[in-house]
Image (cartoon, rainbow, N blue to C red):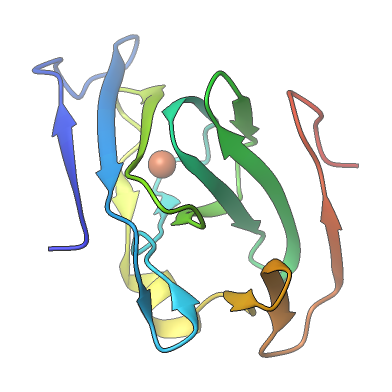
Length: 150
Ligand SMILES: [Fe+2]
């Protein structure tokens, strides 16, 4: 098991906020860091992530393949806007632990990510993690904090 999530027993209904702690172990498959599967929300809605320990990266991608990444480390907040698929990657050498909060009725669509994939991969390079394109990327940029996409 590369990662696991502990989800609070909050009703998955409108108005509720589900909160979930995820732990991704460190490691790689080849040169690609361990990561979560990634998903869209069924109802386009945002999500807030708070890094609790470790070092990683959030990869976000719209349905028309605009990509952005944001550091997710201890005490870092990442906001995933509505309509962006999201996946977390452990680029460090310890467990990456983070808290995520999302709308109770958001729903999770893993199938579209399984089908379409992300158009970038996060791999280990000589000087640290690198984000490389594996498909057509409209735009790649890094962001941190609570910046929202243009
Ligand atoms: Fe999510």
